[in-house]
Length: 526
Image (tube, rainbow, N blue to C red; front, side):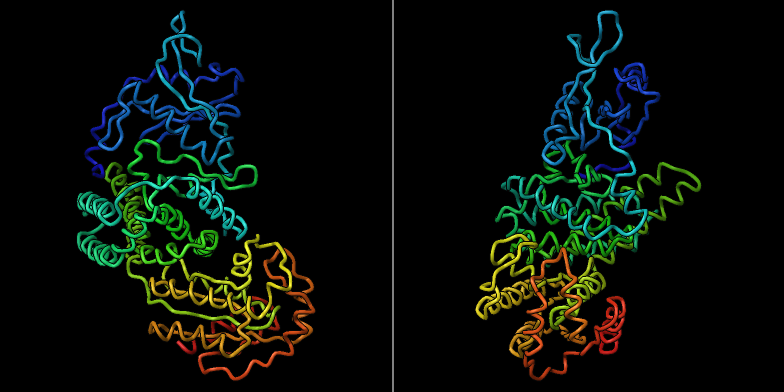
């Protein structure tokens, strides 16, 4: 049961004034910092002292979180340490008692009686939070890819659990709906009714795949609170921390629902391009058919994540007054607007981007993907990456000539078609980039869309030979193995006739110019 605003307001607090004063005093620490910074949440207090951070749990009892006794707070501190060491071992140091000395004062550790327990952590610069970085400007694609890798690794390390699928998620929906009804004055009863209707429709659509994913092990003990404020750039890599520790049941969820919190947060922060990179990188790392078919759940997952943020923000508004309350209400309504949009996705479509090596197929596909189809944009399948996966190598490992035989090429195109079939059948949009030099290759990708009754557009990129050769010769840090010799071979291809669904695009100029031409071509035929 999700807690109501009244439940939260009535949560009792314990007498921790002495411990708080001790932690707030610079003299309490061996390093004797000049000052101690204090940060608060509804369930914890964090004290930043020098190079370290000390976190204690509030002595509170909410319907969803009981920290009312010292024994329970110790257990939750130990659980927080255990869970977060999985993803941030260098950040989480130990669980330390705050004890009563013989002279009556307090101390860290020692043999005195514990009066409180604290999680001891390494301190990081708040500017390294991904929320701060995202608010400062677009997240670099490389950082978005590293973020997806970190999340994929965390999901892979979490053991599957025997859990329900649709029934479990249905109970969550009912609880959220009931709590939202209590803040209808801030969000509007009519809009909440529309939300319920759209959630119900998406739940009906996703029920079978939710059950299938649960049965296959996709429900795991995940991070559970995976938004940008709980991810930090640590030693040059994004690190997940502050996982939901107080209730294993709340954090035992579908891995795509865990990912959806981050995708929603990125989109709300106007970082849709980064969200698209994260989604595509995660799906490529996974390589699982069940994750591609699981895209059917994404509108529901994104919508519910945003609706919960609307609910929490509206509850906070109810506890404020004046301008602060108005700002909170506006924020809550923006989350609700986003939830309604997530839950009413546009129809899927398929775009194929073809052309010889050096025409900029992948660059164009990446640029188009965030704005195509349901949020956070199209699934982008790339022949170069699928070929590397087929041969079991890293994306930057160069393959030999056997990987580029006719038989290998046919298999790569078959994989692209099979994967895109799953993406489109799940109701998502797709962009696939490959050379598509042979008429039968182009016909094969068109046929997938036709069989599903989905709009198809093909973009054939062209550029002068000297441009292609220069681009390929200067390429570095890319999955493509193409060389100038490969370009010379491709220039001799007989591409045959193109169907009317394909549009030729001059890609001789800058990538920006090519993107503008491609978008214009797609808009003219829409």
